[in-house]
Image (tube, rainbow, N blue to C red; front, side):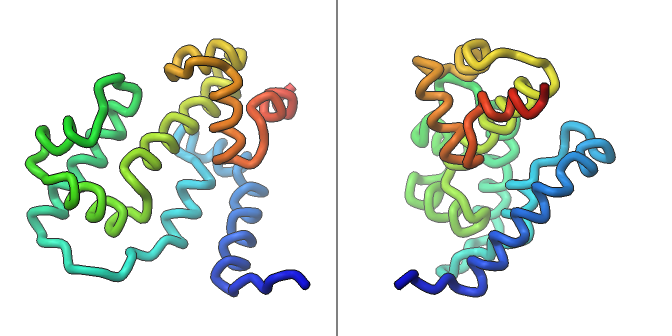
Length: 163
């Protein structure tokens, strides 16, 4: 017997399929800014229930997100570094970020890296080895596995679809 999926899960899958169908159209209208997974997360993820985050911490967490958006490729990124830079303790950073944005700090960094990978493969026609090296992966296999975990298909398939 197959477990029944919740309506929220079914809705998320349907929305993801919708966004993937219209990704090419949206890419023409919003070049570089369109990411169907990001759009799905934007519309589907509700903040986790929990404690109320003080306004000062919300501002700091938003600053962390803005910083990560610009520096997601930096090698020195760590929770400790972010805590020191933005005046948050590790608990507030991890729990607050997840509660506010629906993703972990490094889950968000990983999404940004994979979005860049997708752009490099599609727009700049880079090969998988170049992309893996640019993103700092120790091997193209590690990069391919991470890409497939996020998007559900390998970067090689993406490259083949673009041919």
